[in-house]
Length: 183
Picture 1 (tube, rainbow, N blue to C red):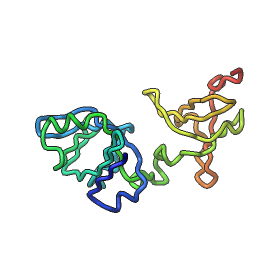
Picture 2 (cartoon, one colour):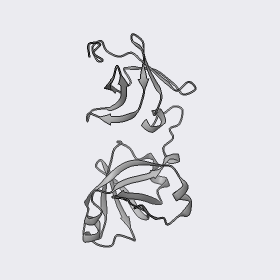
Picture 3 (cartoon, rainbow, N blue to C red):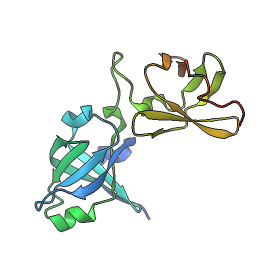
Picture 4 (cartoon, helix red, strand yellow):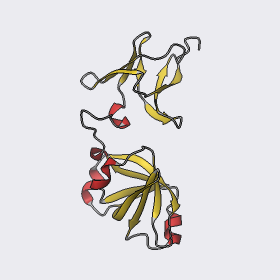
C-alpha cells in the first residue's frame, strides 16, 4: 500500500532523490536529526518541505526550520510536535526534488547526475555504465558491473580525466590492480 500525503500537489509529480534518513529525535520539541549522505546541503535555501518515506508510507511535510548540524540537519515541522512523534520518524528515508541537485558547470557534479554514464579507463577501455553509488567512508564509489561482477570505482579527482556530459562518459585513469583482471 502506498499512501501519499502531499502539502504541495506539484511535488507529487516531481522526481525525488534520497538525500538521507532520520537517525534520531533531537530534543523535546519534536525536531528530528536527518543524517545526510553528502557532506553538503547546498539546496537548504530552497527547502520548504521534505518527503519522508518508510514502509510504503510517503508524506511531504512542510519544513518550519532547518539548520546544518554536524553531518546532517536538524529539522522542525508543524507535523511533529513532541519527542515521541520525533522518535516515531526514526528510520524514515528523506527525499528532496531532483531539480535542487544540479551542479553548476564549475562545481563537482552530484552523483545522481552521473547515473548511467559509461566509465572508460585509459588502459582497460570501456568498463560499463554507472549503475548506482556506494561509499567506503572516505570517498564516493561508482558501482559498475564488469566481467560478470560488481566493481567499486572510487570517484576521486586524481582518477578522473574528463567528465563528458555530452556523451555521458567518465574518462578515468585507474591505478593498476584496482580492477583485478583475474576474476
